[in-house]
Image (cartoon, rainbow over all chains, first blue to last red; front, side, top):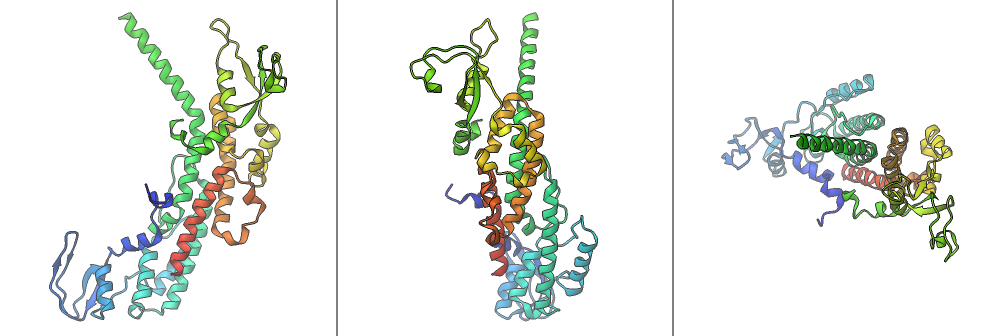
Length: 205
Length: 176
């Protein structure tokens, strides 16, 4: 394949950001618009000042034309994020529950609709950065527990998993290879034995 | 094995020389130890590439005797000194100087001798080193000339490359 190796088994951050634009978000339209039926999803009839849920990409188009206000999701709020940060501090072995796309959506909203957010965007940015860093440190500590067969990633979001994926895959591959180098022999020996037994049995018949 | 057919590191690992002891005198093979035209004596120790040594160490001389052409001796990269160093502080061992495809060699060696203890030990030291590699991959600019970076085995270098690429992509995306 012509794709570079890193892109064949992993997504790039802009790709994930693109995918996250399919998430639904509440908007407050300023104009009316007839509903649109798309293959994947429906955009409901929009009427002025009536809250509707639409995919993020629609919201961003309307926002850029000044035709709607975006209602920020309940988690994108200073108090909530601070609470999560304290939760992360208190429980050093657990990740607090954040939305699957929290990094991408917060970044998009901070860039494209900072005037719709309840709290000042510089404060939000810094708390998000803090949250990301504390979670990064935790996940890095967790990497010590890697083994060849399984891994638990409770509470990590899409973007965070994606960042670690190449490393984790390669380490687990190698551990698997090392592990297999001895067990493969045992398996072969067993199958040979079985074949031998089968052969004997058929002779007896 | 088939998956490794086109793997250049696998081919290089198979070319790595390991010490072997001849179990019988073979005429005409003297050039292996620098005596062209002469016979190679029984019990002489010669370094042969692994691909040749592993076949000779498995093949029996004739159907009646179970004796092999050669006996494989412990290669220098798995001697007690190296293994103890890995046990005490895996991250400070210069694997690249020992043999550049250390993990591939371990796989091959362990599958020949079914050495579970060796594999468990190498797995642990690989984990320790991989953890360290990830730390370095997180901030590439600071440590690029560090000793640790030049002590990496080929696979570890590759691991460093993929993980630092991933961290770099993430950083550029965040700063966009």
